[in-house]
Length: 281
Ligand SMILES: Cc1ncc(C[n+]2csc(CCOP(=O)(O)OP(=O)(O)O)c2C)c(N)n1
Image (cartoon, rainbow, N blue to C red; front, side, top):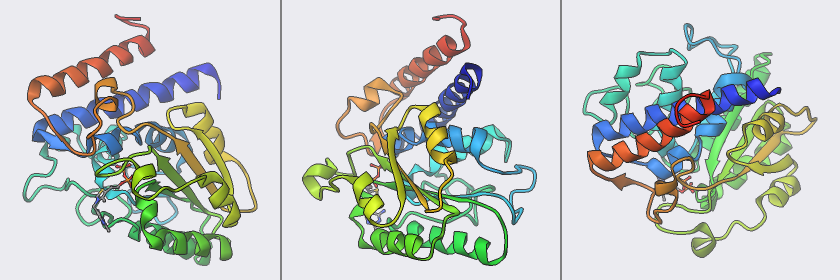
């Protein structure tokens, strides 16, 4: 990727963060930490890597996303809105009764969501099945699976990882959001995952570890050719892209007032202006 392409993806990531924060501000609370930490990879996936058609969201040959850490749904919705799957204003109905944007991903409610998730671990097996199904149908579609480091405490993930490698489901890419924290503390204190890259390598993957906010490194890792399934471990920070959230220890789900949301929004707007070379550059 050249410098302009990198900057465009960084801008897209900041725009996703902005839309996400406005979405959460409308409800007053949300799973902010783990949503912010996937904005960069969502920008790379939907901005450059995935073969999609927002006008034809059920196109069978499309690439698919399984956000197994389903509580990061609001970041997925922000990305889909910016790609034109539905009007951006609809994001402001997040988590409202009867609306199409629940706190966790639901493919029966939100246009463009490929898999229903929320019960941690289960998305990993669903993704393996979806990708294998595409293989059996002779489609060259890829499936991308986002899993949390805390989520990897669920045994089902390791069964799905074994299955992915054993059945050579090479059209499935695992993306592990190693943001070091989970709902109620640090993964290292609760149930440490140790060296995730080495673990996935041992399970039969072609595994790399890259900074979770480096769009260029993410792009390289996600487009690498391999005769094994790829695992990309993102070295990440929970709440990434909004310093005040990063520095809040309990940032899994936050309830804050409108002024605080506005301060987060202003911080991302300043980053965006810098990236665009405008005011604040
Ligand atoms: C099976 C199951 N157990 C518990 C929960 C409650 N829960 C929701 S998010 C979460 C922590 C997840 O941590 P991680 O995967 O690291 O996500 P991140 O920190 O990136 O948000 C837990 C325990 C759940 N959704 N599903």
